[in-house]
Length: 423
Image (cartoon, rainbow, N blue to C red; front, side, top):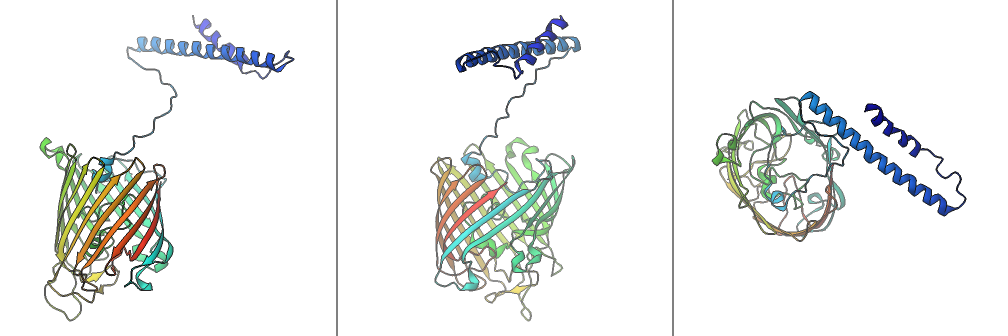
């Protein structure tokens, strides 16, 4: 029986022989010979597969186990992200525990063309013509069953001499259970939606105006605990709780010997589909030299994300003590700060999916009591997005704005064309 099966391998050797056309004197005769040999080879392969299946069945019977024959079939590509998931971002602020860390980094490049400065802007307030807004490398994932890490570096602060901003993320994670993650190091603050939404996939060119003033750089240093409350009880499925103890004062070395405390809770209702979040920060900030009074750095906010058909809606409201400084290693105090004053930010974003690859959007963005100018800033954006494959996107944005902003995500031009590529 075994000899007969092994004999089926012999024709394969002859099918692979280069002497296929010997004796043929015309092209038609040669084609006919090739077709015959091809048919014989295909038949031989079918018989060989039957032999393999039979051997596998006998082996299963002997070992008492059921096994399936493994064949070399192409692995289907991952399913594309649904429009609902793209708007809601169910894993917003998620830990890195779901993937293994790899030697190859994640890469992100964002190039942009800027034009048509707003009337109030000076050369120091904007970028002219072509620029590279973001160049980032990131490693993130598990390093063992209970431990993970994340590390992200960016190049674009280097030409400005801002060496302290070269490291975006540098943190370690501990997984004491399936529900709990403990993160320590430098990472994105657990506050609101826009703060935690990655620049690589964000539709508008920059975050809401409030983000750059209340949370410049989006990062802080400290310890954060994340809890998936759905692991404890079914009725809290889709609910995530974040609690952090952080340096404050713009995420560099703590400069007032006091800590800030952040608390955020978010619930995703997949069946509606809707996501709602609420965030609170309690802390203190530095006061300019010679100035006394209220040094609170408190803030609270609410945010929601909703999908109805092809329309995606995101809205966020934040109110808190007016920041006394802007981002920097050494404190740089703003001219319009007064102790105890409040600033308010609100943004409403609407995205309409024209097709699987084409979107249009519009956004209203307002920030009251700008700490630099003391004015109320209002902007309106309209834009078009075109996806080029799964890892590239081009966006065209036009903005109207009544005054200059000075946060870390400056956008004081009317026209911007962005090209994002991530890998």
